[in-house]
Image (cartoon, rainbow, N blue to C red):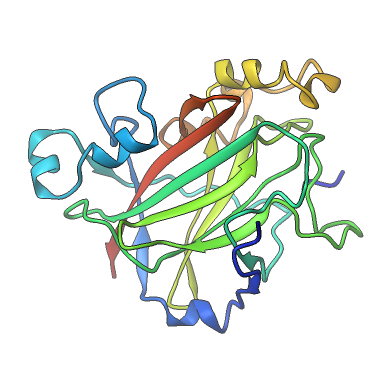
Length: 241
């Protein structure tokens, strides 16, 4: 089975542009990393605070991120771009993936964050004869440590819960491979909408997924409804090598 506004669609080579970035090792913030409140919109998340004062107050805490399998559907040389949708139908999803220094929780500029995931029908691009690159992309973190992506809510396929694959690249090396997850309750709501409602009765929820059970709770996105769309946020702490 196949798993599947451009911002300068520049192909990011593993041996080229990524080699200019510094070497780091990746960890992730705990589920309470961004704030103590249950619901935060994007601006409130920015205002939650970083740095030593936030750590001292207990607002932010940094823990090791679980490494998880790359899976069989990774494709090299994804484009450096923010919008990865390529016209694929689905519920709009903005990803706010932040990279910070685990020791101080200060943002790290220049990390290359990569994502890939399946479309609403459960198919991945670039594999098993498909030459497309939809729902794949790379973004470098800005001065606030933030990488932004415009994508769609992923679909599902047999044997796996809903997820997004991610890597962080530094100094030409892959320093973290992980997966990002969604609340089952939010997914249930999203899947009542088109085109997901054409494939009812998804087979695997979070607790039944063997990969999710190995650290997925600490890799679950904080999701906020924004009109008809969702914003998913998570902070990944890094430790300099």
